[in-house]
Length: 456
Ligand SMILES: Cc1cc2nc3c(=O)[nH]c(=O)nc-3n(C[C@H](O)[C@H](O)[C@H](O)COP(=O)(O)OP(=O)(O)OC[C@H]3O[C@@H](n4cnc5c(N)ncnc54)[C@H](O)[C@@H]3O)c2cc1C
Image 1: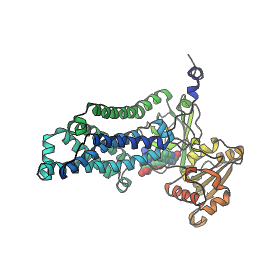
Image 2: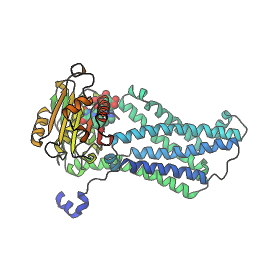
Image 3: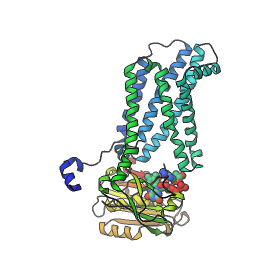
Image 4: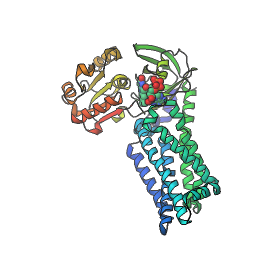
C-alpha cells in the first residue's frame, strides 16, 4: 500500500500547486458577456417590431431571457466552486447572489406583466382574459406561473426585514424552493419562447448551460462533501472552555491536509447529534489546520452555538469546506495589521500564527468590550513573543474608551505607519464598518483592506 507522501510524489508537482483562486473580474466579466449574448440572441431573432403590442411582447421576451440567464448565474454563485470560494470569498458571493436575486425577481415579474399586456394589446382583449387564456391553453405557462409565485415568495422572505424575524434554518429551507421554481419554469422557455422554438442550436446551448451549472451544484454541494466525509471521518476530539461564553471544539480526522484548508478559512459544521444534525453552521478555524486535527472556537450565545459546549468526544462531524478568501493569498504588502473584534478573533488568531512576516512587520489589535470576552490570551502572547509581533488590546466599553474606540487617531497612535500596512479585519458587522471607515480616513487604500463577515 502506498502512503500519502508516496502518492503525492507520483502525482508530481500538480499536487503541490497552490489552490486555484478566481478574481472578481473572472466572474463578473463572463456574467456580463453572457448577458450581452442573451440580448444578442433576442436581437438576432427580432427583425422588426411593429406596434405597441409587439414592443411590449419584445420587452417581455428580453426580460424573460435575462431572468432565465440570471437563474443559472445565481445558482452557480452558490455552487461552492472552490476557485470562487477561495478567490472571491463566500461573503462577497453571497452578497452578489442576494443582489442578483432581487434583479431576477424584478425581471420575472416584468416578464410576466409585459407578456400578458403585450399579448392582450395585440389580440385586442383585456389582461384578465389574456391571463386566463395563457394559463388554460399552455400547461408550461401554468408551471412557470407557479415558479414565478415561488420566486416572489422567496424574494419576500429574503428581504432583510422579514429575514431578521425568521430562524436562519427556516429561511434557508424556504430558500431551497428556488430550485423547484427553476425546474418548473424551464420547459416554458422552449415550449413558448420564440428564441428557442425556432432554433435548435439556441436550445442546445441553453440546455448545456443549465446542465453544466446543475452538474457543478451536484458535484460541489453533494458529492464532494459526501466523499470527504467518508475519506476524512471527522469526530469531536474534545471540547474546552475558553472563558465564560466561548468553547473550542477540537475535531480529529484522517488525511485532513488533503483538504488544503488555510488559516482564515471556515467550514460549515454539522454535528451528528439528535439536536444538531439538521443545522450546518459556519465557524472559522481558530488554529492552523494540522493533518489530523482542526479547531474551531465558538461564542456560545444561540441555539446551535450554545449546544456545542455539550458535544461529547467521538461525535461524528460532517464538515463542508474549506471556504472563504480571508487568507494569506489576499495580502499585498510586507507589513500586516490584523484587527479583530469580539469572536472575530478566531480566523485572526490562525492568521497571527501563520501569516508570513519578518519580525516587526506583523501587528494584532484585539478589540473587546470586556476582558471576560477576550479569548486566547496566553496563546496570543506566546505567538507574539515567538514571532516578534506586536499585540495590542483595546478593551472596554465606549464609555471608557470614547465614542470611536477604533478612530484613525487611536489606530495611528498604535501604528504610526498604518497607511503602509495590509489590514485584515474580522468582527461584528458594526465594528467592521466603523474600522474600515477609520482605516480609509487614516490613508489605507481600499484594496489593502480585507475583511470577513460573520453574517451572510
Ligand atoms: C464565515 C463565517 C465564519 C464564522 N466563524 C465563527 C467563529 O469562528 N466563531 C463563532 O462563534 N461564530 C462564527 N460565525 C458566526 C456563527 O456562524 C453564528 O453566530 C452561528 O452560526 C449562530 O448560530 P446560533 O445557534 O448561535 O444562533 P442563531 O440564533 O441560530 O442564529 C443567529 C444568527 O446567526 C446566523 N446564522 C445562524 N446559522 C447560520 C448558518 N448556518 N449560516 C450562516 N449564518 C448563520 C444568522 O445570521 C442568524 O440570524 C461565523 C459566521 C460566518 C458566516
